[in-house]
Length: 262
Image (cartoon, rainbow, N blue to C red; front, side, top):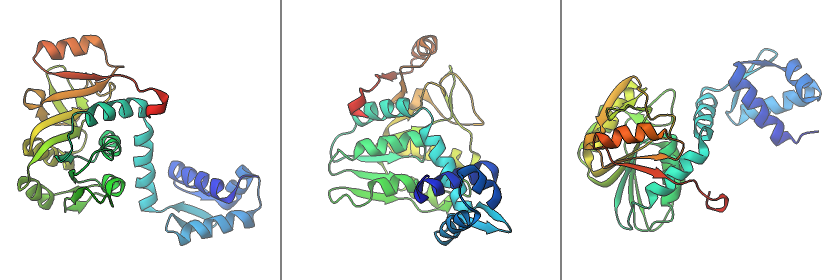
């Protein structure tokens, strides 16, 4: 029989997928009694991770967005780790670094823990949690409106705060980079924030895995002509890289990491 901790994690995953599950269905799936499932659901509800319903449970709103972000962070994970390692090599001790709220920049943040005396500026709650408490570095979490569907901050207050800051380097994720060197996001809420981050840094790097290169998304926030470089992974189409370089766009292709480096 699975442990209660494992079973509760799996229950949360099912709730995120199906929106609601009955006690009977969960009991049958895990091969336990309805009483056991009810104990699980009470524990999850007490922690704020699920909502009890008549005969079952539904995901708490915060749980839903936590799992969405977690699933996004797992997608293309080896590519993101390789990109993050290459990005961290471009940061020197003592610099000010700006990070947006993407899952690739979260991987960059983890790599930056090895650096010293950094000032990190971000709109991302997961990045803030990752870097919080380092005694030799400073963390600036930009104020603003917490988005409903993602753990990051946006809005006029966020943008005004960015305008008053300057960074040595910014690492910004993208949902699309086309062959003309335009950089896109799928979020209209993020578009202005990302544009201001791009303008606030002495050097700005776009970090995007190979699935994002060669495609467009909803809103353009930058052009690679004003970017220091695109950092992507080795899965990128060489023809796309050649076209970008032909247009004068610097591209850094991160080598795959050895298992022990991940």
